[in-house]
Amino acid sequence: MSILSKLFGRAAAPAPQTETHNGFRIVPDPQPDGKSWRLAARIERDANGQTQVHHLIRADVLQTHDEAIAASLQKARQVIDEQGDALFR
Image (cartoon, rainbow, N blue to C red; front, side, top):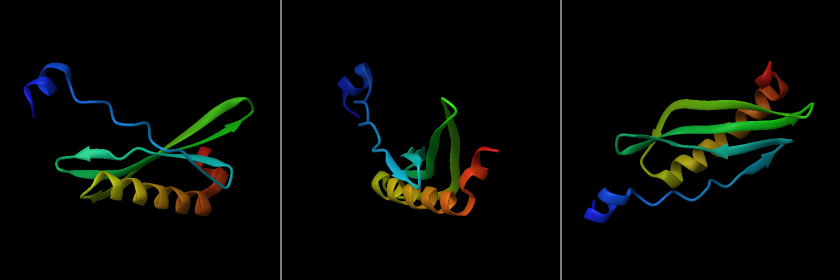
């Protein structure tokens, strides 16, 4: 890490790309886990004027941030397809 990074912190990561699947928004949010990335995402939907949020975190770890984003999106789609509205009960 350079001296400037230590002084001013690292550059902020770009905002994650949001995907829509069956009326739900998926925001990939992989979590750092040592040198790996843990699969995680937010699943959101708007209902009755409020935003409902489900935090999806799995034990799966991947080597790169890009792999973790792709896996997070895939797992979130699978959970939506399997559970649908039950995610928010």
